[in-house]
Length: 309
Image (cartoon, rainbow, N blue to C red; front, side, top):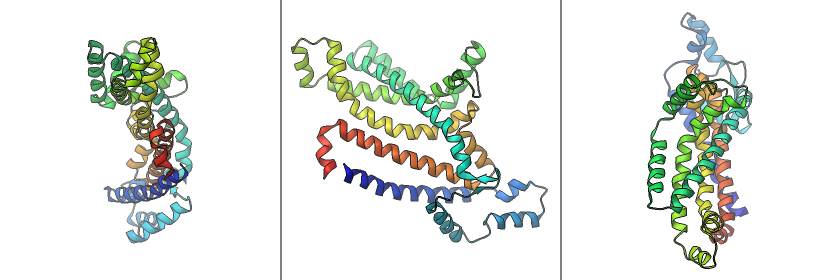
């Protein structure tokens, strides 16, 4: 187990270096000059040159790159010229809101997805199975922003049951969390359905039935436990993807998290904030992947020997 975690951490170092390098190239390849954007079109050339030198953008690109990597190794993610404060401080200030949204969406997706998958898997080939399968395909097909807009029109403007945007009460979290959970719910449901269908055909299920256990006991006590192994893995992987997907949802619902912060940073060419958000999300995804691998190893005895080697 220790060796497996050590290997994952070593791979994670290269992943973080790759993420840092890619975002460095992307933000500087984007059109627009940070100094011009910040000072406005009426700024003089001297003012623009002065701010460009202050930001270090007048240096050769390779000097900027190696200087940036050196700062990251020292956990210095630069200053946000737009916010007038360290970039990582601004990012960490917004992080709790994104975590709240992501965890709530994950809980909704796991509970609803497991329930749908269990119902469909236990009735494989039946009408319920077909209905659930069609519903999950539809959930994955709808664009997230469209789902958010439809939910606002229905539950906020039409029925007036929930607030359409903002933050402050648990009710404000419902619509953005449900919107973010839509495609994830479909993934969990389809994976659970497939795993349960396969598990219900295994010999140990037939043995459990022959002992006189009810169908519910067989499903929940035997089939579900083995079906959770791939589900746990996909939940760990998808939580990181949800944080990335929260960018769209947070802007639709004016949720004060990392999504709205990074959109504003991109619009204003605030390199430090964009880089800090990217590296933080990459680090979180890396940790979640390692945690998912550990859980997977614990749940599946067949790969414990391999993990020790």
